[in-house]
Length: 265
Image (tube, rainbow, N blue to C red; front, side):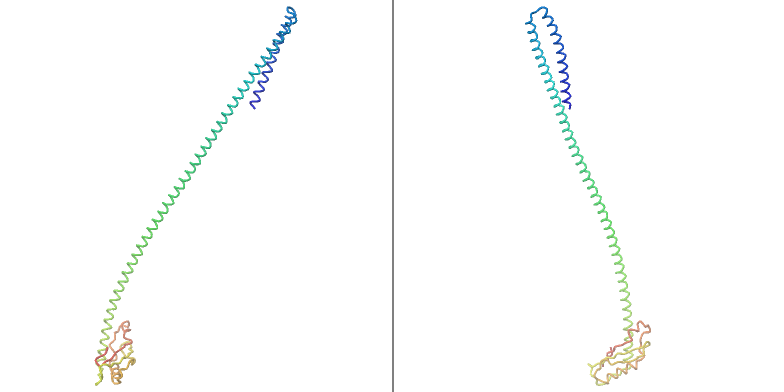
């Protein structure tokens, strides 16, 4: 568009110059014609006109050349302006691309930094949670160990107490058993001419207070005299010397006695 306007202006200017030049030439021609009519022959007038026409053509050619040069200069200037504008546009585009690239890199770095911070925060939180869980586990383990230790100590104490009670109970049992055997032995008359290697076993049912309820012959010695004498001795010893404590007496409700010629066990 600027090229067309410049061309039109140049064309209008050229037309105006031609008009002015034509007017000047016309005036000059009129003057020369009048002068030639008065002072010179007809041949000189024709020659002057011919010379003026060449001058006009020369001037027109010069004007055209100047206009062409101006047009070329204008076109060169426009091309230069366009080239500068294009170069500026390319520079702006490159600068914009560079800026966009820098912004993208900055955004990427920011995202990576944000992700790194999140990972660090998550790792710290996990470590803190693990530490907390470890503390809870250690505390629980210590409590369990303490409880187990207390239970072991309590069980050991209870076992020691039970052992002491069992020992004491066994001592009482042994004492009353010895008293029972002694009582039966006082009433047992050992048969004569009985082999020492024979024996019988009796199962004696005893009531609280020591009364003999029944006697079962579990194993016979093979000698009826020995079996009857052992049974008779138990019945004569009733009531047997048993403990008054019912808990302790429960060990004597059912007595298993082995009777041999050399003694009762």
